[in-house]
Length: 307
Image (cartoon, rainbow, N blue to C red; front, side, top):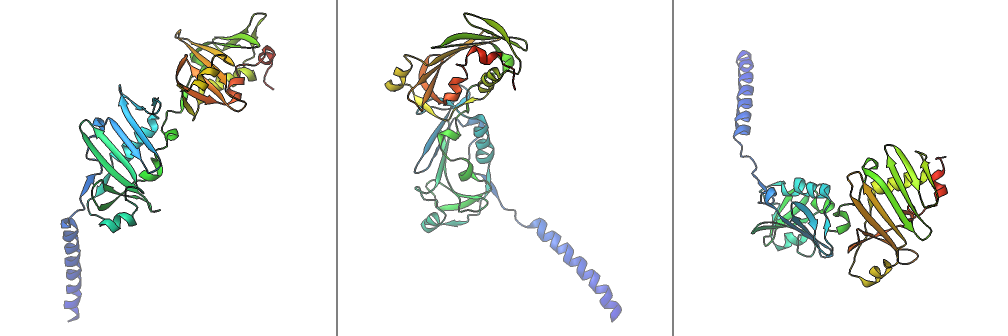
């Protein structure tokens, strides 16, 4: 009897293992589907909004831009992340919940949710997202009360505030791209010229080589490499335009390719200074006085070695 039991147990164990493997292999897999049933490469317009803010992104001549209220190039890093994490996302087709009460519970009613609408030609897909403090977001299709979950944090990363979607740099020049920088203001008119790694200062009365580690020069090159602002203004504002009738400082930047760009700085009041690029008044940029002052330093400043 004991011998039969010892023989039976391994056989039973083997049968159980085989049964488990067969059941696992034959178990129905959870179906997944694309959240946005659009080809990402065909998308040419994106709308994102909440009850408080709204954002429009449009593909114009191959570049994503924010066309209103002021046309401005969008931050490509932010847009790429939206495509990778939202438009390429998939979800399990089994609904988490459904019904009007579910939409209220999961904060997927029109007033509470984050809306994302993508358009590709004549086709559009409108999805509403929410997050209740969980690891992943919930969502529903517009006009539907079925609630699903997506393994992304759309609500956290893609709010429609314009400041987070604009291309951060107003302009950007690296030192090796610069040939000369001319500055004209009430007290002086001087030019900084580059020949290799050597910079020369010239004005109406003197000319000298600027020490390579000169603080004034470093400050100018630094701001040109990272010239960003989060405050834009509509140049149709006559009060703003009037300030540029007598600019505080004008700067001409000439690159090694021979192109020259003009920066005009104007003072609005004791706290606000504005920038106009290439006499284009459609978009104006608010800057700090420290930014303007870098281009208004006296000649003696450019003679000093960094200490």
